[in-house]
Amino acid sequence: MDIIALKKDPSIPKYKQIVASVENAIANNILKKGDKLPSLNVIKNKNSLSRDTVLTAFNELKNRGIINSVVGKGYFVASTEIAIEKKIFLLFDELNSFKEDLYNSFLDNLGDHIQVDIFFHHFNLEVFNKLIDDNIGNYNYYVIMPANLKDTKQSILNLPKENVFILDQVPEELSEYPAIYQNFEKDIYNGLLQGIEDVKKYQKLVLVYADDKQPKGILKGFLKFCKQHSFLNEVISNLNNRTLTEKEIYFVLDDKNLIRVIKKIKEQQMAIAKDIGIVSFNDTILKEVVANGINTISTNFNFMGKSLAEMLLNNNNDKIENPSNYIKRNSL
Image (cartoon, rainbow, N blue to C red; front, side, top):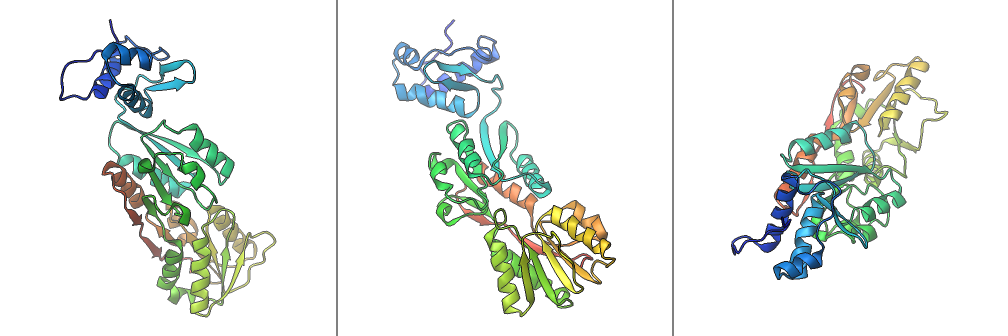
């Protein structure tokens, strides 16, 4: 029995018929995982097709993860999950609780028959480049969170431009791509402005900021707010050997430093809000309950995930700024 069976039906493109033939062969156990497919030339010659027609069909199957290619050997069945219609490559910088919210919201809004494979570059450019290079041509869409890595464009240029979407931070070199992003400078400035009556009760704002991992816009927004509203301020890279002083506000950008500040407040027998204020970046359920509630400046990660799913499903090539708000609790 021929694996590839084409009909004289002008309403169905030949490449679609090739795709359907492979799917049917898998569904009927004629092809199993690891089996080799007929070569491009065999299918082309037997069915009087162009090589491009066969290659288009194989690329669609490859993008869906159903087949893969081995240089010099041909094409093989990689998966029998033929219900998968699209595959998405999702590259995050790192996993944390709020990115987990984004990821789950993204999955919930994609619908059925779409596979999402998630990867992490951990702020390492070599890892970033390798993950992209190793997955060129394997997916229908590529969603990339470059974070503050420099010189990412060269690797991204190897991907089909119409299938690339940028997430969270959009460096100038990637401004031509569709994106769901945060405007960090504006978000921090406006967030602090929304809480300015609470902030005024303190004498100094201290930003705990890691230059190698955190968005430059956060630093710009913080310094802009302090300058325009005449607040004494300090930027530190970590809390090591730091002695807290009464009437300081600590603006912390990650959960580890949030816990460190709370621990230091207890060790110095101070009280949150009364002696030391805390503002945290990116809201989580933890911050609703820890220390009677932590004030946050945060984007809506569930909304970001939903917007990203809608962008891909609707082939939307816009740039969408995700909203951010100041959430008042009890740490100021």
